[in-house]
Length: 162
Image (cartoon, rainbow, N blue to C red; front, side, top):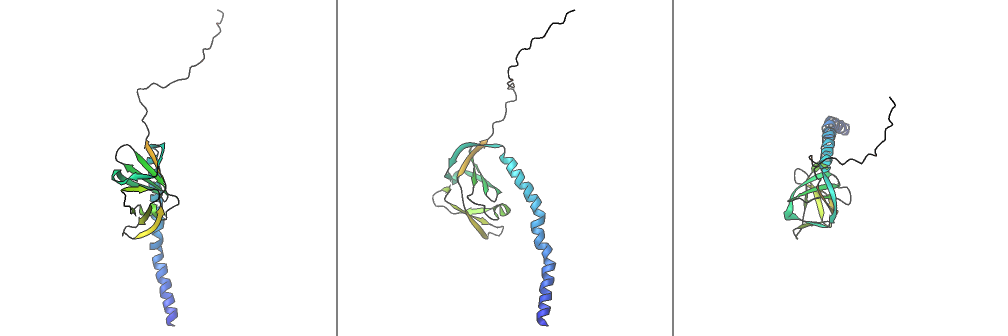
């Protein structure tokens, strides 16, 4: 009898708290998807330079932005910025949007490991970085520049008799 009572109480608690646990995933998902889309739209302002580096100097990093579970944008001081595409997806990286790393050389390199942190500072997944792809802001079109038009062939018109 006591065992049946415990089972009923546990089942009741699971049912009572299920919406609270599930709502954490359902509600913010749309907001997070919109944020991810906005992040990638922001990235569209940039273009690849074709230069790839294995390491970046930590004292030049201004800020980072997690774009998804596999992509981190590194905003640098100056005009150079980098995108790092991790070798594999890193669970919870986008959801938590914070990570830590340990290095002793003042550089962050493609051989380094990042660790996802939650809002309480607990460590989650550890993931390997990829290479740093340099990107730069796209040049804005000059509004005073005249559009170049292809030369149009001259067309002879026939004269109509009067």
